[in-house]
Amino acid sequence: MLHVAKPTPFSTARIRETVQEILETGGLPPIVQAGHPVLRQQAAPYDGQLDGAELAALIALMRDVMHDAPGVGLAAPQLGIPLQLAVLEDQYDVDAETAAVRHRSPLEFFAVINPSYSPLGTGTAAFYEGCLSLQGLQAVVSRHETVRLNFTDPAGTARRQDFSGWQARIVQHETDHLQGILYVDKAELRSLSNNAEYGARWAHPDIGLARQGLGFLPGRPAD
Image (cartoon, rainbow, N blue to C red; front, side):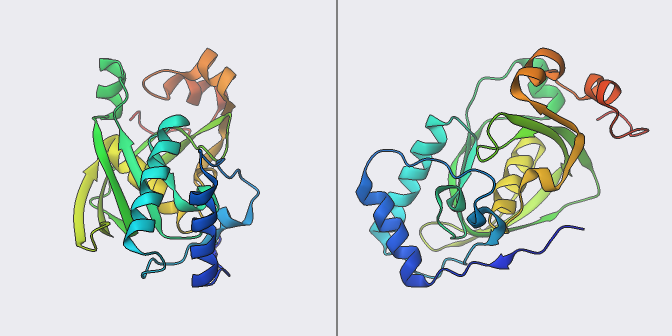
């Protein structure tokens, strides 16, 4: 059972001050790493803590940090901001076999505010994933194959959109961040590998060899 994160102790004024400090500093802020309390708190729902210009500037900065890392998603707590805001985008070139096995297709950039997801159907898929807040590590996580995401866009419009495959994985990963959940909370810990070992041994389209070599998910049908 996952631990239920406590709501952030940050006040509205403190959240805005934190954002303003980051925006005024200039350059790209560092990505907060595991062990920082902000990653284990339930982020505050966005309810107008920032004005329109501040929100737009923060989203643009988060996109730049995500690209620089590089990654396919970034949540506001990863910059030390306990706010329910995340950016997502996946435009990286992936070989055809990997894309087919992982059901990975390009994801256009978008930002989500106060997101929540629910599974559609019972299908799950298990693959390696990493996190910009746990640098140098990857582990296998079983996630819903298809989810429905409810969120508010930066213009304030309530939206509902369905995602499947790798896009659904990104959506779940980033939304979990806003509830104080890291991917390792859901991972098969026997699969945990540093990037060098992953690259040398387990960087395949599926997890079959890793399952055999590291001894996790016994008896599970191949994805």
